[in-house]
Picture 1 (tube, one colour):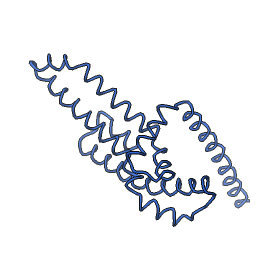
Picture 2 (spheres, helix red, strand yellow; picture 1 turned 90 degrees about the horizontal axis):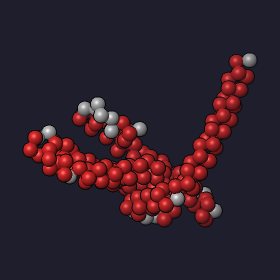
Picture 3 (cartoon, one colour; picture 1 turned 60 degrees about the vertical axis):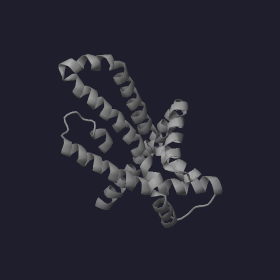
Picture 4 (cartoon, one colour; picture 1 turned 120 degrees about the vertical axis):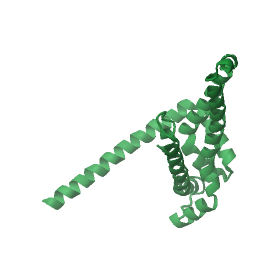
Length: 189
């Protein structure tokens, strides 16, 4: 949510920095927790081992930069492209530079396309980054490239997995709510 909130047009600079810092904090928290969860799942499915939560958290803490930094790399590249677009936008406000900015307009569209590829690939492939580091034991750049490759080379399979996970989550929430409501009703009775 913080990274989506950053791109609202009515946000002031201090609000932008606040939301950015919240997003970075979220990356480190989810890098630790997501890394531990995916490490447990990876070892269970590949070696039929089940490490405890403490061992998985120690592993995730040791590899925290690899778990947390891949989204930041994509965001930094998007920021580099965004700064270039800001410069062109400022140049368009000056009369004699507007013609130059008009000539550069295809490059502006290209930069916008590159930002869209980066940010949409990041949005769809973010959870795959943790799994890559947990299974392969690689660094953040490999996690970023593998998640983008899977997202853009197998989009229908990824969509199927997302729909299946959503279906399982809905059923699980229904069962949990059913048991919670039953427990409360029986306690009141």
